[in-house]
Structures are given as C-alpha cells and as structure tokens.
Amino acid sequence: MENINDKELIAFYNVENLFCPDVPRTHKLDPAFSGLQNWDERKYQNKLLKIAQVFQLILESEKSLPMLIGLSEVHGRGPLEDLVKLHPFNSTYGIVHYESMDERGVDVALLYDKKKIEIISSEPISYIFAVENKGSEYYDTTRDVLFCKVKYLEAVMNIFVLHLPSKREKDINKPKREYILKDLHQKIINLISTSDEGVIICGDFNENPDEEMIANFIYNENLDKILINPYTDLYKDGKFSTFHYKSGLLFDQMILSASFFNQNSSLLFKEAKIFNHEKLSNWDKKFEGRPFRTYAGTRYLGGYSDHFPILTSFLKKE
Image (cartoon, rainbow, N blue to C red; front, side, top):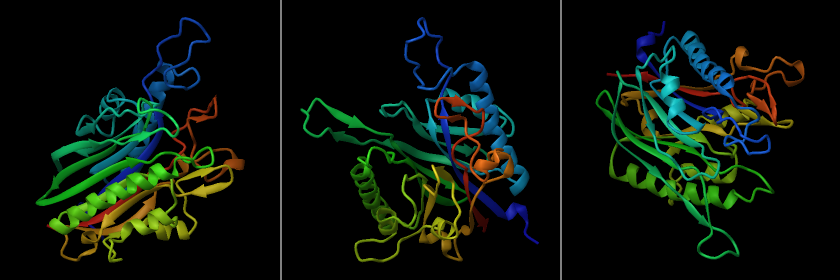
C-alpha cells in the first residue's frame, strides 16, 4: 500500500480571469477594466471560494495538496493574496508573481508550500514583438514566462510557468508561440547541459501535445530526447483539459526533464492526470464532461474555470 507521505504533487491551473472586482462605473457605457460583465465584489468572492474549493477537492482526492501550483489568467498579486488566506491554504503558501505587460493585464504565478519549498531565485522572462507594417514605436506584448529556481529537500529544480499567446483570428499568434518556445528551449538546453538540476515547464501552451512545436520541444539539436511530456499519452487516450466548441483540447501540460525518470532521483515521476472531478464539470447534460466555467461569453454562470487543473505526482525518495 502506498504511503501518502512518499508522494508529492505539482499542479497547474488556468483559473479563467481571476480579476479583482471592477470599480463601479460612472456611466453605463464606460468599459469595465476586467472586460467581464458586471464583475463585482460578490462574483469575485465566489470565484475565490470556487478556486479554493478545487484545491480542497484535490486534497480530499489525493490526500495532500500540491507543493507547487502554477496559475494563469490572474490579474495582479491581490487575488493571489486573497486566495492563499482561504482554506485549505490557510496562509501556508507563498506567492511568486510579477506584473506583465500583457494587454489584458493577466499574469502567470507560482504558489508554493512554504514548509517544503525554498525559493532560491525568480524572474519574469518578457517578450516584446514588433507590429507588422508599423513604426518602431508600435509593439505587441504578451504574458511573461515566470522562471523560479527552487529547493526541495536537497534537490534544486528549475520551474517555468507559462501561458502562451492564444489561438485566434486564423492563429496569427502562432509565430509568437514558436519564438517563445524556441527561446525557452535554448535556456533549458543550457540548464540541462551545465547541471543535474531538474527542469519543469508547466502551463497553458495553447497547443496540443501532438502539434509540431510541442512534439519537437522535447529534443535537442542532436535529436536526443532531453524532456518528457507525460501528457502526450493522455491526449492520445482522449483526455482533455478544456474545450473549444465541439473540440476537446489538452493545452494544459507539464513537461519534465529526463532526470525525474531516473530511479535515483529524489523526485521520481509517478503519474500525470487531468483533475476533472465531477463537481468541476458542467451540470448541463449538453456539456457533460466539460469544465463548469465562470462565464460563457458575457453570460455569468458562476462556475470554476473553463479549464480543468492538471496534476503530476511524484514519489519522494530521501
């Protein structure tokens, strides 16, 4: 029988627009900062409680909370500070967050169990893109990639949390995703070639695991497999973390360095899963098996998120 003390979890969750409440508008035609319909204090508090409840469900199901939690679609540090005060976190989790230049004002972040994880260093990796057929004063920004070097027991790990530019308007953002992944790929090769520290890349890639830029990401220039994506097999088995119209998608993934598959590793990969608990799923039979989201267009539903969280479990070896 497995000892729960021998298991550790790492999670990633796209929480769908976790914004602070909008300031009341002086005129009904004034735009809301969040871009959400009537995003007020009541809806904000409900959203926080819903996200906290997700992790309570993870605790009940897995018998432990993730020691590291990557988040995306968070606006600023305020909602994170409010979230970690709630049960089951109870102010025992720290926050790593930087304001990005994203046009919608949404960021990625990392929550960590302060009893288990020490943050050695952290930094945002920012990307600025030229706007085609425009002068140098015009530029396009996107969400930062968050980099954290952390210590767990005696092991040092390098964590990247990302939310790559979205697929929209005939996928005009594909070159941006390719550029960011190429840049990260070189950084990861440098890390792996100069140390035995583990590397974890988690986030919303806005690409499925079998798409070319993700499939090629796990190899170096000599076609040696330096990374492993355990979410590829889940996708092949028809497991999805989000949906677009009738299509199931697995944009949320966690890619690991090969060191986590070494029997001598202090953290040995055990399992990857999509946490699609029935309470997080849509109650409408027409959308059965899909995440119960906060908004559908401008219509407020009061759910959790339009994504399911993903969980990777490891066996702890001291």
